[in-house]
Amino acid sequence: MFRHAPRLLSRASSSAMRWRRPFSTDLPAETPVDSKFVQTWRSTIPNIEPPKTPSAFMAPRPPTPPTIPSKLTINVVLPYNSIFSAKEVDMVIVPATTGQMGVLPGHVATIAELKPGVLSVHEGNDVTKYFVSGGFAFVHANSVADIVAVEAVPVDQFDQSLVQKGLAEFTQKLSSASTDVEKAEAQIGIDVHSAINAALTG
Image (cartoon, rainbow, N blue to C red):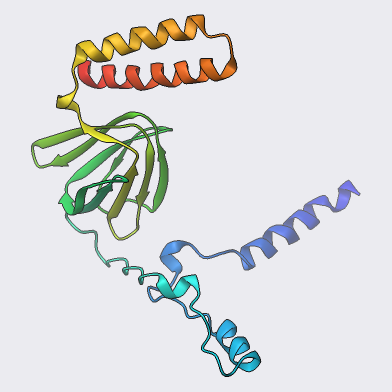
């Protein structure tokens, strides 16, 4: 059986490559129309207009520019506010769970989960820093980055003494926690306050 393994694996890999899903940069910029669904609907219920599918509500994807632009366009959105909308900057550095990730114009399309940390927005010699509690960064192939966070607060608005006090309180809660839930809540508090403290002292 093992003698045929290389041949079977080679056949499986070639089949997977033949039927692979195209990357986002290979997809057409126009929103596809679900013609098969519409045709089936009209042949079954000709007197009623077919309902719109989710693809009908999607805006066409902007085409990837042939050359790398000089600026990166960012959108920073919170559940209750929009900090930046179509803002052109030189670079952003996001606190991804895999480490600090710098995004420049022409960055490869990426989705990154954010951890509590500092979001740095670079415009020339000016650097604006926000503390984000978590979220996601969507980097598109057309040099547009969408950053969705739960909270984002300018770093200079924090009171370092209160941050250190909160860190001490959560450290005490962790040492006295008796259940897994209490331990998890205390550890989250420690992680967030430690990240804020590092942002203020770093």
